[in-house]
Length: 287
Image 1 (tube, one colour):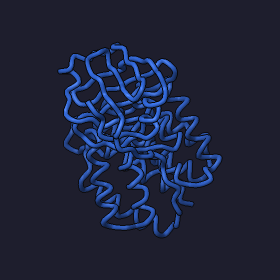
Image 2: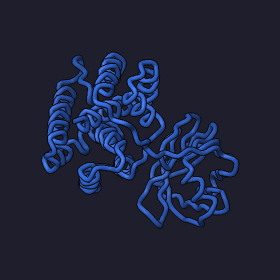
Image 3: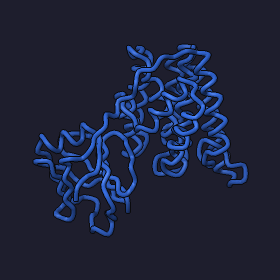
């Protein structure tokens, strides 16, 4: 089958390099791969257009129904991915995008206005049970949400005041915290780090904080969450997250609402948690 679109770097690697790897994890509509020459995860998405780092969008395929299992060998050569002979994906002709997080102008007044609009929209439409407390949910869920909130508040204050070691301490207590395939604390940190990447040149404290979070996450969360944190620290994010960052910094109401809607469609609570992380990161960097 033919890939419809994908991360330009992923497409280029399949077209120009001969690589071997393995299936890392399998879901009905998503497949994660890891090549033998590096730690990064690469994702194939079925039916849903998701412009994210290291991702290819395909047509209608059920990866479980195709018989693909964890550990299947993968080869990439001459513009084609071959998953154990069970699925072949060509990338020639696929449209591409660059997942680089844009450099943005940080006007404090405009950003505060954008944050107020975005925050109100997330509170009204976001998924509860992760960072947002579900007041009707189980006690344990509510306690976890409150703990995430406390650590997030501490993170914002510490980072904004330049107490980076303390900010890293708060982040370390968020990693792996919360429900979901990608825990809510990780999703929040992904958004937070992405927001820090919008300053050019990248501030020394932003680079140090992001690198410290990735170092801790390597031993504290799962591979899928880690992959998202690594790409954010490298200055890359999904189109929905980048669009939200642009919309908030420009305080454009229709664009903010559209961008928040797009982010909220990610996962179950992941999109909500990322959006809150984006807002937290912008607040922390707005001095």
